[in-house]
Image (cartoon, rainbow, N blue to C red; front, side):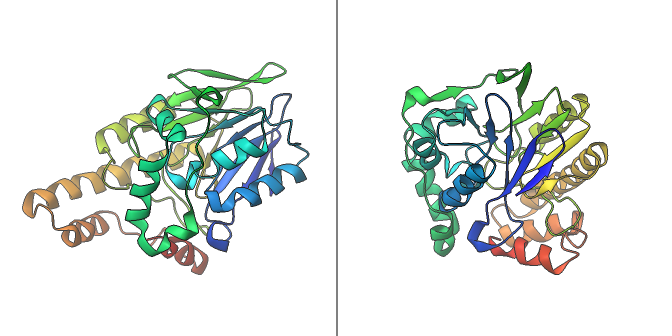
Length: 284
């Protein structure tokens, strides 16, 4: 658990027992908010960290999800039960999956196979505790401070970023990319939902917010926001073009597609340390 400027606390969820895989962020205030919450298997780690940060079981006001992939939302049901005053805020496309998570969990487990137990599932959340966030929705934190939801499709259709306007801090989720073990930021482009055109449009929107700090979910404070957004834009444009060309040449050949994407934007800079390689290969 690390304290950052502006009463922002980064919590390492210790996904699969590995440090530096996934971070969630507590924003302290009169109405404390947790941005993302990690996997169901990390719920206990996150709850203990909130307790350690002085957020009691009756204190947490908001659980705000950037999107409904299980590494970001899987603990939401368990934490909603443990923190009974918290309202769960999510993109409208993701709300139904929190209330009836069976399809989401089944699809995720099919994708990860033997690794699924390390992720866990998602306990259903009562519908009355789920709030849908339109683009621009404002989440009050008290004391005149608030979070603004910014729809950010590309990585997923149900993705949004959160801007702490008073602090100039942007919580980008997976929209810009991931950085692990001090490696360079690298795009996160999960099949089958990734949309390169939407992703590039999102980066323009995020740049326009003028944030002074940016946090990515995997993992921690990004490089200077403008630099990170520029890397994300160049990388995703190159990888998207390569993927389209590979698909046109050999539809359905995933090996050829992966090779084309790697050639277009090599992962060497992202995997430049042993820590980065351990984290990257754990679920890839």
